[in-house]
Length: 460
Image (cartoon, rainbow, N blue to C red; front, side):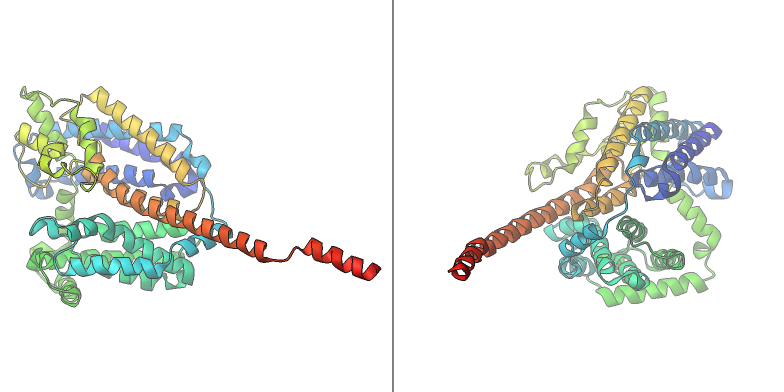
């Protein structure tokens, strides 16, 4: 455990040293910090018996296997960090020019972005959008909401602030947090707050220190409201047609219950224990390592690249839905290794422990780190509307670390789709402008001919 923590400290220190004062603006930094929480902070807290006793995810798993999993995954993330730094990402920090910002404002109109968000939000608050798949099965509305809702909300907020100024930052963040909190999930509230700040930083419109502190407080309040509501009423409110006003009122009640209740489930120590258990990212890999020690064979490594087919939309691959969970590596490992059928957090370095040996896992994470470095260098080379959308998607994907590589790529897929649409609109608009310019020139008189005629008349 101590060696694992040391490797995590080394990875974070390397990032801070090489990337300098702007190290927190890089999506890869968020991945490494997330690993420090899931494989560092949480396991340390779970060492204490009052907290560790609450962790049902480790039932039947010996402590030495979770320690081994922590060490292995920390080594993977160090290899990921080193390979990322080899690409020299510190050379790509750029500030947006005024011309680029004008292009972004013109391309990303907050009005039509908000208009696209509204139907997804309505479906969500009616129980037929975001979070719907857990209730009555996936539908077209729920698929669109799960794919685009979180990203479109933050892009619309960013576009509004870029046009009207960061003096509206607190108000916009409050609205954004309410819209997302009403969906019933805590992670999107945190993710979109961080994404909005990073987009503003890249666009050269950073919030003030006071605004950043207020943003942290608002995000914490939203999280506490969702937590208090879940403790008192569960999740059922978010899976039915309850409407926005009912959800906001319930969130207010949840915050009141959290602040005034004497229930042990709502005390600060209990909240810390619940959080430590919920973000434990080593129990999944630890259970697999224990099963392997008992003689269970690893699954075929060919499933690793096959699992990436989850990124292909079902609208393009019509037979994808027929495969069910066959493309889900976590589901396959739970079934094959006899793990508990609960909501494990596989995480990026732990997802393929049941498929690959330690050397191959290190090589895989190093390759992923190198790809991330190359992608960041391209992303930060220029400030364009499409790249800003991809930056937002990259941050959301980085904070989807708990889902593993396929889940992170699915989060990135939404950004790619929106960026392609924005780029096509830009190209069509540019062609239309050039055509209009040519028509104006063709319709204008030949000034050289007019000047020559005037000269002849003057001479005669």
